[in-house]
Amino acid sequence: MRALIQRVSEASVTVDGEGLGEIGAGLLILICAMQGDTEAQADKLAAKIAKLRIFKDDEGRMNRSVADTGGSALVVSQFTLAADTSRGNRPGFSTAAAPDEGNRLYDYFADQMAAQGIPVAKGRFGADMKVRLLNDGPVTIWMDTAD
Figure (cartoon, helix red, strand yellow):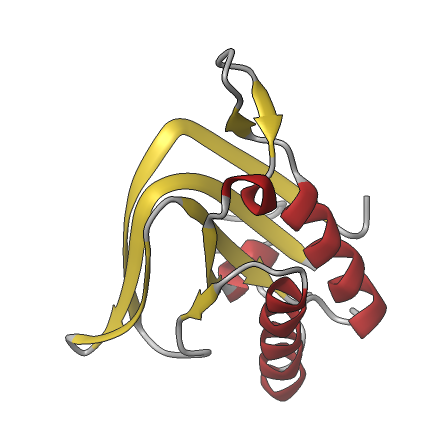
């Protein structure tokens, strides 16, 4: 699985003007299931993200996790994280999981974040979503379970 994690002061997602998910301080997690990804990888990624120390402590150092701060997570599916740009000018997405499996792992990942004690809001898999965020820092981290 691939994830792009952004520390945010607030974030929200809408589809056709309908508000689906909204959080205050926490993490916006753009997530993509890749071909061959498993629930075990989603478990590991959710646990790591929940403990990722990218929030400031009392001394201004990135030493606290979203769990430590009581923050939330907005989890948004984003198959374009699977983009292969190695040839030509049009990215290919053939390494992304098939839609049914991608949706299943997306939901599973969000559930695993919630199981870590993180309040979770979500987008809608496969929808044309509008995501708004106020990036805090900015702090943006790329994670890939293949690494």
